[in-house]
Amino acid sequence: MANNEDLFKKIISHAKEYGFVFQSSEIYDGLSAVYDYGQNGAELKNNIKEYWWKSMVRYHENIVGIDSAIFMHPTIWKASGHVDAFNDPMIDNKDSKKRYRADVLVEEFIAKTEDKIAKEVEKAVKRFGDAFDETQYRATNPRVLEYQAKIDNAKGRLYGGLEKNDLADIKKLIEDLEIVCPISGSRNWTEVRQFNLMFSTQMGSVSEDANTIYLRPETAQGIFVNFLNVMKTGRMKIPFGIAQIGKAFRNEIVARQFIFRMREFEQMEMQFFVKPGTELKWFEAWKQERLNWHLSLGIPAKYYRFHDHEKLAHYANAASDIEFDFPIGFKELEGIHSRTDFDLSAHQKFSGKKITYFDPELNESYVPYVVETSIGLDRTFLAMMSFAYTEERLEDGSERVVMKLPPILAPVKAAVLPLVAKDGLPEKGREIMDVLKYDFNCQYEEKDSIGKRYRRQDAIGTPYCITVDHQTLEDGTVTIRERDTMKQERIDISLISNIINERLKVKR
Ligand code: ATP
Image 1: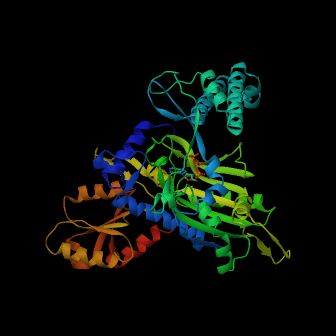
Image 2: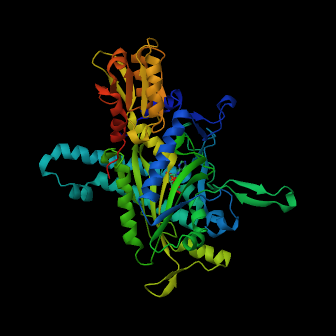
Image 3: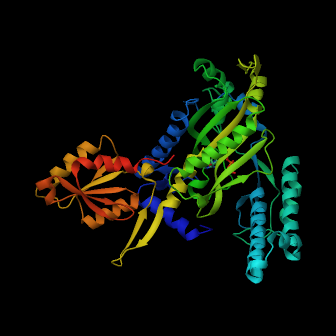
């Protein structure tokens, strides 16, 4: 889809116009990087959650789900490393007064340089045709080598600087690479500073009793600290997983990409506990399983790619992202991480409680290893909106915007539309609605021309429109119109449920 700002803007305004996503506190001029979900957005979001929950918790007999509190004992965030190290390096441009993530500025430089290499290769393919040997070209072409050296140098200094917390060198790197502020165009930068992303607040009404607590920056820790509870009460045997959906909060430095990067967002996470030594096998298995989940929604494979991490967090021994081709380019949608025994061991140490599993086959106890799958609910929402948004020119010359959402996720599954609001058609429509509404989220509409009502349903992604006309009163048939093909068929009222149900089945 490549970088397509216009399309992104259109999706954002469509999301607002049709009740999917609103800026938080809009009548007070908004709150930056915080969003509210409207009547259609809330349905879409709930459907995504339900689809994830069912595929993770219900279809896997060895995964159970919990719902832990947002507030937790502050020492948890000490143990997890978030108090000391959940930082992003930030830098301000003195002219535009805009704040950036220093690492992102360098990563964007790297991405641009990689694009330049790709362009050189593309030109060479055209020039040399069939005789072209890309590996050799990349290894010998002076211009490509020069770009590659710049990339290697930038990566080495950035990752080295982050690891050693050498913020002065990261600033120097930004200067050496001659990176300019996209707003002011200047290179007038402040020093680089670390910025902790956790929101804190006080618990307790008297300030002397006050205890600093944090709004959780991830849901995972709520799972780790409940490991023993769930293992014992659920009589769980390794390998097993614990899943959870819930809010997370991060004081993101740069938050200018609609619901892609929010300060309050929702995660769907699953921690899978395994025998030490088997974690890489499970890591591979979960990578594949999660990709299959995305594909099962019927979205073409070209929208997804893996990005294996070169630089691993200190606790991980493998990590990969599933990236989605958003209108702003390929970006992270989900992370799959092999977290070793880092979290459980840390909680064991900080809490002083033994956190082990007794393996009856080995006749010994160990701290389990963990493979995590962590997906952003809001980013999945945005991925679905970006994929679905389609502008079409119809045969009669008119245009429509249709949201080709996977039917199982569509906010409204069917709209019941009496052709005219008289002659007993509304009553018949209500009768049909009253049967369907217990199984599906349906809408009943009788205002405006039938064409206008179809367009409104297309714009929110309703897979079926059911039209009640005079013939319905005579022979008990309706027309059913399919969203994507706009084909209409006459069917018996008794078949409506089956047709909708058929469409909601997913490929597994
Ligand atoms: P990024 O590199 O984009 O900041 P991350 O690697 O910090 O993301 P994780 O900590 O792995 O993200 O969180 C797991 C998932 O949670 C991400 O894949 C993403 O979908 C979602 N997520 C993380 N931060 C945000 C945010 N600020 N707004 C919306 N979703 C988010």
